[in-house]
Image: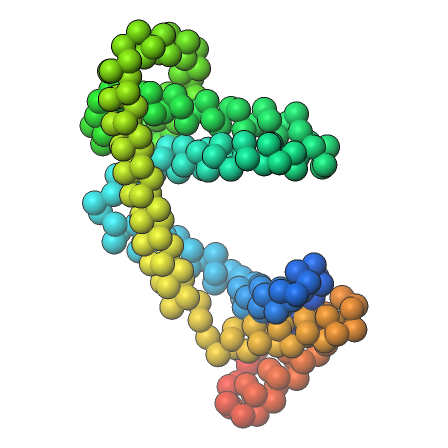
Length: 260
């Protein structure tokens, strides 16, 4: 009965989340239902998922021995900052944040991230080395990010140096941009490889017929709730359908005996 109760709860939660997302996603309602199914798939026997996460993480990390893990956090933060800075200013010109009433905060955050990116580029060009050549004492996980953020104190001086040396500044910024784009590409490739390995290993560790059944029942329950536009109906449908499926498919058809 304990397993049946866990299945019922997971199906109900997955169905409710799927229904809400389907309503909010409009024409992409199917994506919402799939997310609800994935939610039910994951939260069933959640203790097993929690235990599997560090195993999958270590597996993914162990397969990437050539990557300097100490630089991953720094690079990721700077790349996120650069994306926000690059995307932020066009949005400001389009006046989109003004319509939400968040113009001042948006401009402040965009400016901060733009400053971090600029300082990083200047720092790379002045150092004249790739990120891997920075002294080891600076290679703590967030070291590069903190250096870039704290560089605003010396920002005017760096700008002055670059203005007084136009040839050096142009060459340095080109080199800095080249290095920046290089580790931008490196970190994207790194996370793609890591994510693929991590989720594949996690899937292999937690997958089961029962878990798959919960995911499918969550989608069905979410679809019922979406049709009636009522989350309670969707959750009840998912819970009932999941419980019935468990007894009919698992116990009667697959002949799996529940643990008492």
